[in-house]
Length: 583
Image (cartoon, rainbow, N blue to C red; front, side, top):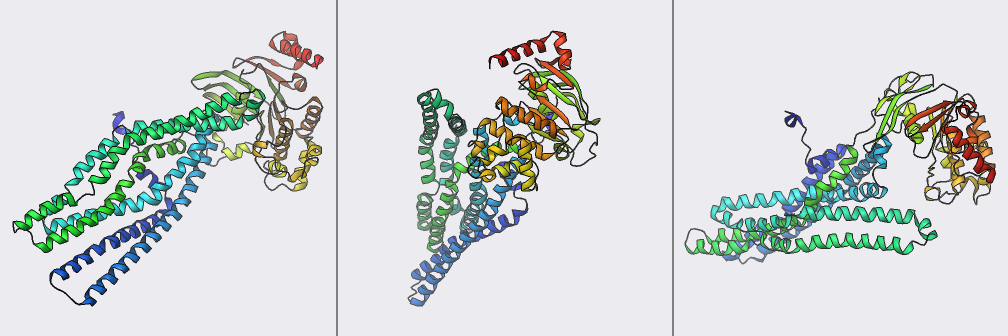
């Protein structure tokens, strides 16, 4: 019963056409023009039939032949125009559709749980969002109109030949079974070869992204040779996969391309015997010969799309894996609590089949200063991301003002949270625009005030173009501490009632950290502040400190209370003070 109710996945062509949306009309027009173009390319053969019959009947008037030659020229011109307009129409629609698919994919990533996105390598995602989506262009812009047209015309011609003489109809199709046999031979095992090229190309993309992103570490530690050797090895593996695929396909593909369109091999001897036996007229024989020649071009065009047809399923499958991935369920609209207290109750969270948080329960009153501390990998950042609604709890609940955050619209909840992580990402825009991402429409004066309050105005003014300085890809033109301070300014500009700082001062020096702490205290007055800190001296005045260890809350209380418990927090504090004394 379960199998009978399971929805069947649509075919690749059906799926990709479903993405056409408002552009379907353009594709219908493109197919119609393509059919007309192929028809105009076949029509001259019927004119040639008339010319040949004229010769056989002794027609000697030059005007007879000149007029028919002019018709052939006009038909050829019509064919070129139809093909040009069909291609232009399909490409115009296709590039619009590809842009929409790519936008839908990026929108989808923002609605997916963070863990589901992080599980995929950046190289694989880049490959899908760029190369794979670009690969759909062949299907939409070429296969849909041209494959359809070139498939329809041979069918029409073959049916017409059957109306002339059924025996000649069978003769015109005699090479098709053998050609299909070679085609099936080519297809056998092709998915194995194609999957290998996909896997090796993904590995190459991952290595390339890793090599470029880690070039500084590679140079510093003298790993240039070994890292480059890995890149070369993966490049050779990708190339070898394609070469192996082509080598395995070349013989059957060549035979299929040669045999299937070779209609004359069977038409000429069969027709000759029938004419000799008096059961087929010479005029009909010549007509069939000319029409059979007209079958060759459409058949060759059909065969040329074999690779594209063969790989459609894999290409569309990768794109669909993003578009159809499970996403965080949030209502489009709904009430938003006015109160900003947060409560985590019996929260468990599983990442990659391993439970990393176990029955976490904590309360963050509105306007309070809460800190999360613990060893590296204890689950502090995971808790912060659950509060920020970047992930969904596996069990238990996270509530805002008594309402489960899964019942609050995503955008409305995002407006409540200003989140600064330890991995600060800046876009390749100006410093001013990176800060303004915190609140669209903020004035230059408001941007600069947020920078001053966050302690980064002075260093920004020391940059080449001040606030109009491009920060480079991922903020690469700035130091880690500078990127962090700009990220904090961006969060402060947002003016959200809840601020989460996930080790946001990890890369700042003590002097700048003091500036940031003062500005954070000033800017978060009256707001809810949640801080994950590796420097315990920055959270000693927190209203409550939760000690997280191995995915559980081991202890909680104020700084003084935790020290009196003589537990993990005291050990961490003593280690912190020892490092600080030696600094």
